[in-house]
Length: 100
Image (cartoon, rainbow, N blue to C red; front, side):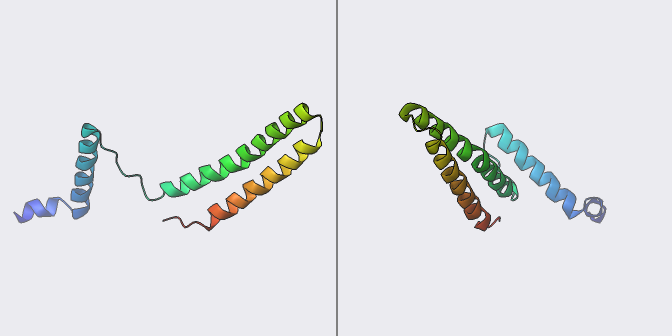
């Protein structure tokens, strides 16, 4: 029995148990927990979407309102500046969150 325990290190056993659990979860359709660093990727995606989406949305909305109301370019500039400020405020909030 000692020869059997010497052939397999505890790390090998842990790896095999984790592989078996992952295979069982895939077979039964259960969701496997994301790794701990996935929250960092989520935060990065939120920052990217804020940097791209908010100014783009503010610009489109400002352009449409300027076109409709005939106030070119004032609403476009105002909404663009406000959306950029809101994006940076959200990024500041995201940066204060703790990645666990």
